[in-house]
Image 1 (cartoon, rainbow, N blue to C red):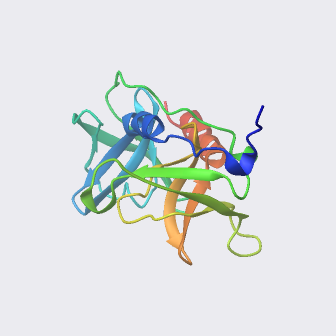
Image 2 (spheres, rainbow, N blue to C red):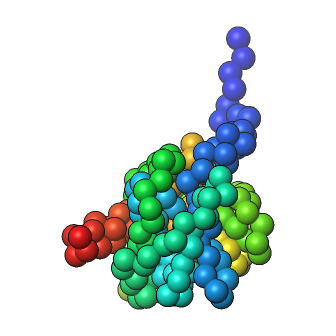
Length: 193
């Protein structure tokens, strides 16, 4: 009987995970560009505030449908925005507990970089924490992001969203931990009917 050691384990097959993430990742468009967002609820999308700057926003679902979107709350400091869309009959994102993310974990990002819809990139978690003392926490990942990835999911290899991709710093992708996004959405829903 042979034993398969962790170092010899085959890499996970990411194609099914990518398909599930494509279903919950929308394109958020405005007159000055586009980014990504995550279907949070049947009528809510979460994205970065810098993606949702325009007054007229449109969300494009994976099936190609385009929906008018209204920015319910945008917090520029946190760089998070909550958008309301007509109710969709689409699967919602599966969320992980971002407190369980560890350095060295394989993660994947999905978005619409440079106008290419539903593109996937993969890498590892490089670090956790702020860029500078007292700063906001980030998930630092060694993977490629480009304009159009902002607001899209950073997920584990099971497709559970661990963060919201936001920017690149020092060559690393930075994502807002999904637990911070949860708190933002809860607070936003408490303020807005």
